[in-house]
Every structure is written in structure tokens, then in C-alpha cells.
Amino acid sequence: KCSVQSSCRPAPAQCMMTVCQEERGCGNGRESPRVSESGCLDVGAFRNFEPLLAASQEYARLSGCRFRSGSFDGIAGSRTRTNGSLISSSSWPADKEAEQRRAAKLLAAPQVCTFTARLQRECPEQELVEELEKAHRTAVAECVRNGMIAMCRKLELWPPLPSPSSVDADDCSYEDVSAPVPVVAQRLFNDEARRERCRAALGGHCPLSRKASTAAFLLDFADGAGVALPELPDTFTMMIQEFTERSSEWEQEQLEERLRKQEQQEHSDNPFVEPGTFLHSTGQFFSVSLGGNVLYATVTATGDLFRGGGKALVGGSASCFLREKIGEKNSREENNHDYF
Image (cartoon, rainbow, N blue to C red; front, side, top):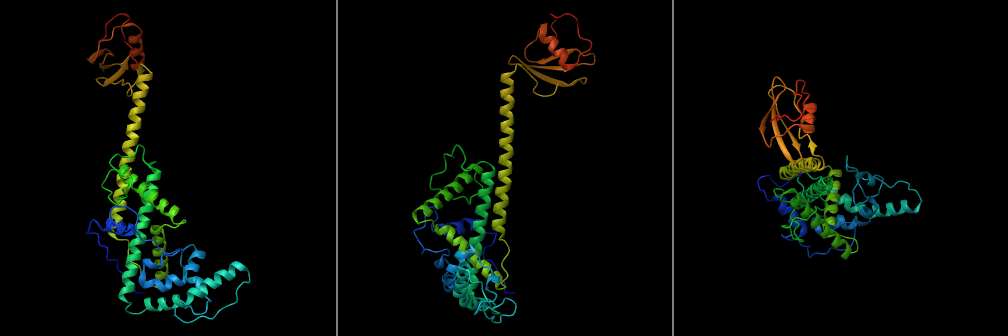
């Protein structure tokens, strides 16, 4: 198999940001001024594959913008991926949809055959190799973005409320995963909102999404031609790993904060609240909130209570409450005795 080695290396920390800015057409997250022609595939995005993409527009529309090498088995002018030999046409169903698919495949087949042969050469053309590297980076960047959006939805940060005040409405630089998780989430949300505006303005087509779909189509084609695709670049791997770790930490922090608030609410609703478990063992420390005053004591061997801090508590029902809670067996009989 031929091998396409990605030129994206983990050393440059800006690799992911550069790729995504190329996707947007600028460095600040604003819409790209380029508006491609209509169609499922963005023919102009990968110029060296333009004849193949132009001929495959109808096929891509019918296939969900994916290329399947098996679709061309039995199509005149196409070749098998195993031995490259021509295959003659076979009989086809006469129904209308089948005829549409067959016509689309017949239209694409000559270019499928030509570009398959070009990629299967012992030394493929450098222009095609570089274009596939570009397609690979584009497709991987889109996959990383989709994974990050899924994580934000899971964390209920789609969008984050309230919106981070440091993030402008046109700030789409979500590639900086060192930023706080809500900031990254807001930038991702801004980026998605920008794509939705593009779709509304361009009749349902978003140039960024079309380019990513075209890149995936080309990678499917290269795989069908027997070209070995590069591994996931380390830069993208580290990016999604860091965002996943930071998201987990943020989720844990939010859980702990909710538990603290819940505990505080319980304390305010009930004057007799146990901040922890009352301890019965000798010499152990405990605390209790009574009417807003936190009292601290130590359990002695005889069951007596000695004040460790806070206000003194004098007898009555409160002392009976404390005796019941700590299981004091040898409590004094005097209800008005000061135990602290």
C-alpha cells in the first residue's frame, strides 16, 4: 500500500489552532468570505482532486457524502481495488431510484478509475499526497470539534449559563483548551452558531461543514484505493485528552460545590443538623450545629462531655438531645447542669 504521512507534528502547539483557522479562513473566528458553489462536495477545497469531486457530486448526494469502493463493482469504466482490471456492466434493477444511483455511478466511474490508478502508482504524485494530508487534518479537526461539543452537552454547558464575560460573541477560538472549560464551551457554541448563520444565509450549506464532508469523502476514496492513511496526529490526541481531563475535573468541582450548597441549605432548614456522624469512641472529636451555634466536644471514657470550643450549652432538652445522640449511658440526672 502507498502511505500518506501527515505533515502535522506534535511539536508546534499551534497546529490544531492553525488547522481550524484555515478552516474558518481567518485567524479570529469570523466567517470566511469564500462561498463555494452549491452541491454536497466542496470542489474548490481540494484543487488537485477537482475532476474527481466534480464528477462525484451526484453520487455523493445519494450516498450521504461518503465514498464506498464497493459501489462501483460492476460499473463499466471502474476498476476493482484488488487487481485494477476493468469490470463490465451487469444487469440493474429497473426502478427509478436504482436508475438514479446507476447514472450517478456511471458519471463518476471514469474519474474514480483515473484517480485510483494515480494513487496506486509506486510513487504517487506529490500534489495528490499533500492534498490527502490536508484532507486528513481537516477531517480529524472536525472529529475533535464534534467530540468536544458532545462533552459540553454532557456537562450541560451548551451553552454555559451564565455566559463567560471574557468571551466575545465572535470568539470561536475553542482550540485553546488551556482556557477554563466554560470558556472553551462558549467558544464552541459561538462557532456552531456561526455555522448556523452560514446555513441560513446560504440555503442550508455551510462552507466549513461542506469542506469537512468533502475531506471525509476523499479519505474514503483513498482508503478504497488502498492508500494507507496516517495515524491520528499526536497534537490532536493531546488536545482531546487534555480537554477530557479538564472537563472531568470541572465536573467533579461542580459536584462538590452542589454538595456544599445542599449541606448549607440543610443546616439553615434544621437547627439540629449533624455536619458529620456523631462519634461514640473515647477521645474522638465531634461537632453539632444548634440554633446556628457550632459546638465542639470530646467524648471521654466515662461518657462525659468537655467543651472544645463554641458557646456553652446549659442543660434542659438540649442536653437530653446530646445525650441521646452520642449514646451517653452515665449522664448526670440534673437537667440544669452545665455540661460544657
